[in-house]
Image (tube, rainbow, N blue to C red; front, side, top):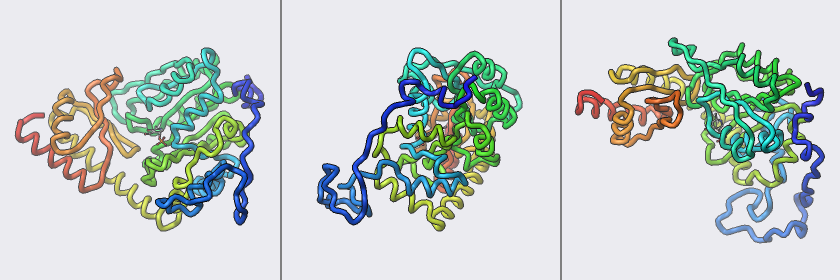
Length: 365
Ligand SMILES: Cc1ncc(COP(=O)(O)O)c(C=O)c1O
């Protein structure tokens, strides 16, 4: 048991001296940071891209803290939530010594960053159930067993990518309770805006061993901006600030996200999300009518998973209509499965009509 959450952090990083950035004060001529005094002719930014971005995007953190109903000291902006996964693993896991738990099939970047840091991975496969509503759920007993035997970090993804559904809240609660004082539980909520379930802030707020990850890549349509957020106890945020180098968050991204969170813009995003949720259900039910589709799993995300014993034919039929879908042949539990991301109503129609046309040409896919 560790009385202090930072006892779990890499000992050599706990006392690391952070970089001291050059002073920034508007209205002053800057001769302190080796920057160019000239704004590039293609530069339309407000701040000027000749000037380094702020060491941390504090205005943006304030804006997002308000959006997530948390305090500023509980949030750290990262370049996508992918970078958050990276700094959590690098900050807390000692190479060749510590281990993490992942619940496969799940988002593959947990494995990738653990491999980069040379951290051991315990894979706890999701539990199967014939009832698709209860399929791909957490094996909480096995996960708690690994927490009790010293796993440093557990990654839970809900709604899960690529299976699409949410994990049962009771399982996540049990795991978070067991982890208190022992391990960090990272709840990756990349798709929570598409889910009918509550997010995990309430649980994270009352348990400093729980960290939530959010991203702007999906619900505000800003994957190209690379903006993610760690939501955690202030102690963890302060520690991660030391692991994340300064100046990582680019000026154009800051300015774009601030615009995206203005009321009118956010309203448009919310409306589009509702369309995506409705379209997801239409697509799921239409695809389920295709005779060679064996399974269409429920989804709380902006995508869903299907199974067909004619996977290659389905993929090539989709491609002929100009649509790419993704298979997961390398994941043993996902043989013959494909993940379909929901698009605009127009493109979803093109996809469906194209599939029907291909189908009738060949009779069966
Ligand atoms: C579950 C999950 N987490 C995190 C990410 C990373 O998102 P980003 O780095 O774009 O914020 C993704 C991307 O698809 C994802 O599916």
